[in-house]
Length: 183
Image (cartoon, rainbow, N blue to C red; front, side):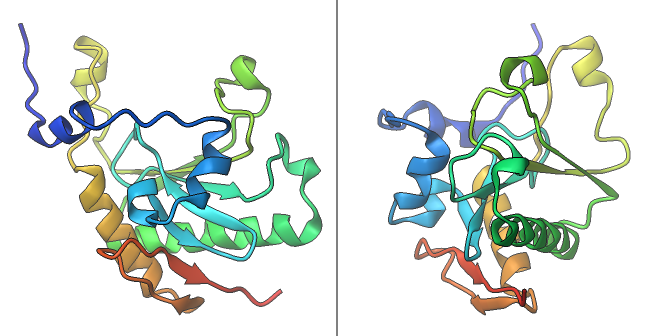
C-alpha cells in the first residue's frame, strides 16, 4: 500500500462541524475572520477565495458578491471589477509563488460543465513545469506540496504588495487585503 504523509491535514479531519446553510460563496464573505473563511482579498464587488480542495498550491477563485450563475448576468461595473481582481490575483500569484504558468476558467452550466456550485466563480490555478507527474496517472493521487495556511500567507503578501491595495490587512488577525480599482 502506498502512503502519502500530510500531517497538516489533521486540522481538517478534527475540525468542528462547519455546516454552511445555503450557498457557500454567499455565506463565507459574511464571516468575521477572513483567514478562517479563506478569503485573501476583496474589492468593491468581488473577493478572492482559496479553493479548499486545490489542484495546486495557490488555487484561488475570484467570486462576485452577487449570486449569479453566468457572467452575462453581471452588471458592467461588477464585470469590470471581477476582471481587474482576476488580473490582481494573477499578479499576486506571480509575485509570491512564481509559477511557470496559470490556468483560469469558469465552469458554466452546472454538472454538465463540471461545476457543483451555481454561484459564478473564476478559477485561477498556478502551474509549474512537471506539476503533473506520475502520481495522478499511476496512483490516481494528486500531491499538494503546500498547506493551505501557508498558501494564504503567500497570497496575502502578494496582494498586499499590489499597487491597488488600499488596506493591506492583517493576515494573522483575519483581515483580507482590500483593493480598489480605477474604473
